[in-house]
Amino acid sequence: MMTNTSIRFRPAEPADAAAIRDIVRAAYGKWVPVIGREPLPMRADYEKAVAEHPFELAVADGRIVGMIETMLADDHLWIENVCVAPQAQGRGIGRLLLERAERKALEAGRPELRLLTNGAFAANVSLYKRQGYTIDREEPFMSGTTVYMSKRLTGSPAI
Image (cartoon, rainbow, N blue to C red; front, side, top):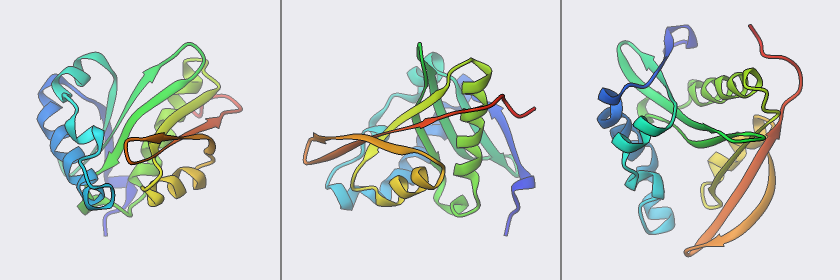
């Protein structure tokens, strides 16, 4: 069992786009039978996304095992995508990536994080709730429900 101390973080570079796409497809693949289609992140253009948004990568033993894609908005930090490779799930990597987003938000003076997920992804909704996110609203989307969540931050960034 790998410990969190073996996880390193670094910003994504353009050359990482293919590896990011592969991790997203692997991580979201389990949801295809649940919702009957590929979740939108599986169809994103990661060459374009890496060029336009900050990504932070979790790396273990020289391999990318997780990532978080964020965007700074006027009054919050938007989490566009966070995922962990299936073989690395259950080790707290997702939580560490979310904590890094919190630090980034505080450093940028943004008191809130926001994200959305599919209501059918119950494991994701419960992970976010355990990390202090609350459900703001739910809206119908395609044949399911989009769940909008947010987390208010207090305090100063941990150094």
